[in-house]
Length: 545
Image 1 (cartoon, one colour):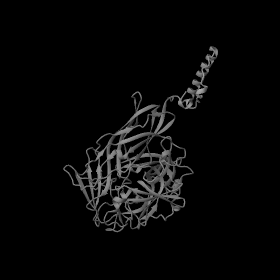
Image 2: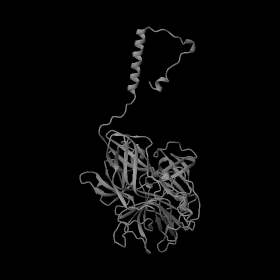
Image 3: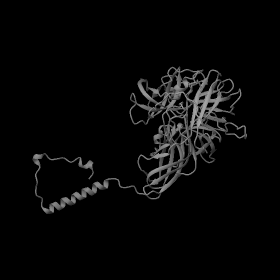
Image 4: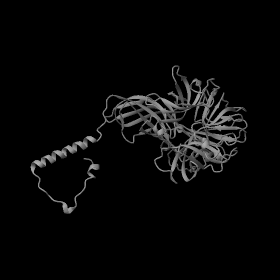
């Protein structure tokens, strides 16, 4: 019998302990009775899993990160599992590009494959290329964007425990551990890239799907940026293209039903190929999505960029600059070969005639105890946005007009400094690391909008907030907060939709940098009228595909 049963036994007091002779027939019966009890206890324990055939396995992507890295692109070539006897099965066999920082705390589907049922004890990934990017303040007053694309070790896939593949279907989460994968003392170092290393490190774990998921931990995909590739002719289904990195995409099928909420369009019949969507959906056992929300920010947009604003410059009124984490559309035409689709990492936009809007992903915005607003007067560097446009312009005196600028949720990694209440909300004061984009970008010269304390954000949590953190929100503890960040008269305030376990702040060093032999620096002057200098420093010891 197991220890749980034995711990319930009661010992007799010592003065009652007596040896009593037992007749042989009675002893035999007692032995048989004891054997029966042992057999009964054994049958209540779960036996080894029974394997019979194959299981449909959905692989989703995720990441766990603090705010030190702005972009992390990987080209996944293969993903394999190895069982107890050393036999290997393939989960991914064709190259798939992935940008991981927008997946911090979230999930996106990667692939669905049939896998023989078994117990798998190890996994492996191969890469066709890798790059991480950080953004920081240049001591000379500009911005530094550092690209590091040398894989020094790995990649490594950690299985916290063996994976038992059984049943009709199951889901596995491939989670990039960003802080272990990208190690560097600070974005700006002396010499350039001193202390930098890249060792892509993943964890692979089962993810249990809910039929009505409310957060990524139970299978809810949130804020998926996608292009409609095709719309089903016979039913409410569509094929979507997901932006991955600057030169790649993936596809996923999404269905709708009567409960799907449409924002920006009247309904499914208004969807058309080429439209850009912001979508929430429940992951299905076949790897498709059942859309719970579909938002179309601009039905007529030709291009869309998604990422953090990196400057709002008063030297050229109504012009901002974005770091393009992902992008969709024909983008820029290459003047050499006259082909569209060229990626521009740091585009400038004219927002003098833009429509400013707030994503409909969070439903409690109007219940906040402050007036949430997002407009030309309070837009600030560090906020995460979608920008739609027509044809992009990358030079000359004309900037690309931004048709719409939509504030969308973002993840910040912060340490709780205190809390208060207001109505139905608990307000947590969270301090940010010095490398977070808000404090880094706020000290640029010539900022149009100034923050009172860019190192701090007020986080508003109510009953709508999904709490998947494993510890309480105690002072001194670090958490990842996902939500809409507003600039309220110089104070950063977040309407928080999700709280996850945090990632420890990475230690930083300050240094004056210079270039070494063999390293390259591209100095990009701002377009005519802008004096800001963007220094892009690149180190690559690996050929990109």
